[in-house]
Length: 478
Image (cartoon, rainbow, N blue to C red; front, side, top):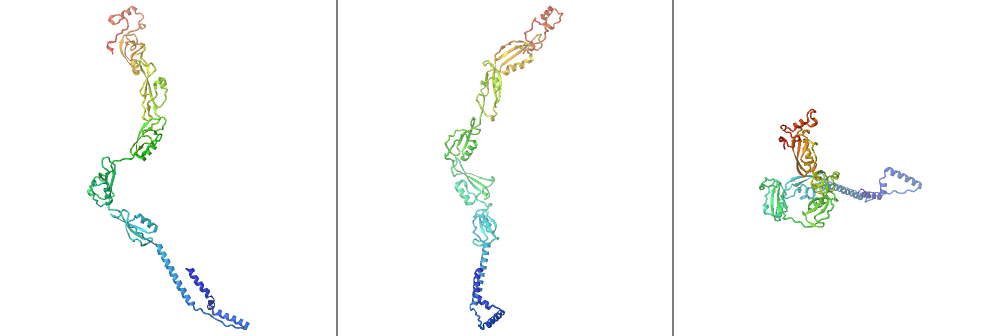
């Protein structure tokens, strides 16, 4: 604006420059000029007259100039005021029926404060703006406060009269919930093979003690309707799961909502918990909730050896994760050292994780044999000897003892019904035990006549017979 005005000022200065120089000169300057002219006149002997000119339009042009400057100043001031007004005020939108989040975004961008007043309203949804203090289209100064009334939704304490859901379909129940804004009434549909689709099944209040005649909007109620029998289209193609891990299988099963049925089997080549084979063929079409049958690897099994291929000594040298107890037993048919039996069949596959049983292996001791125990054993040795030698090895060899007069130390075995021969698997022996009541000849006195000894030993009154008795002691018979 100043540049525009300066053009007029400069033009005036140019037009009246000459006149101003003449008109605005001081008296001293005029006098000095006259003196100079007089001197020149005297010098030239020629005097010229002085002339002064006045512009008749100067006054009008000056008035126009002042009016123009005034109008321009007014226009500038009005422009500045308008710009300031526009800059410090914003236009208020129509927030009615809009979410409070929209008003918050607008207030942040425009620098207007918000004051929220909450109020229950059946007609307005929760968080919807019901009223605003400044009408839409009007302006509000930045930094000022805009009052908004926001809906809290229907009053939760208000009583709601429930219809007879048993006489309604699921669609009718949903329409009622929407119409009455009873958001806490949940209409649940579930599959049922017996109830017709859309028919009422049951209703349950969250508070079991609630009287439904006094139901309020804040209370919770679940109403169940049938979706009928669930059927699925067989549109899921079964891939090749061979050698796939159980993790991959479970992910596919979860995604396609099928039921996984597995069987654990041993495998020498497939890793633990990977698929060995599948009963549901590759490429078969199945539906949701159908069964997918697979065999999973239990890893390499522990295979029970065939101990019939080994001798007793060789079996003792076998190493592995299986525990075997090697035993010997008598047999009338299996020769000594040969295999008789094992309690777990050869080739049986066992899982190390299942605590495999101890394997009992029996080798033959041949037929039972009774040694000559006379003068080589005592009566006290017999129980252990017969148990370890015969009973522990499957032979039922028993014995009876009888006591005889003998010069052998008391308790020494001096007679046997059988010895130095093979016995059947079931047998009974009679064993004579010395009473040690007869002195031996080596211990007899040197001056005792031999005849007297003979006579003494054969004296009927002493009960002797001239030899060792073979009768069992009456008071110690078994």
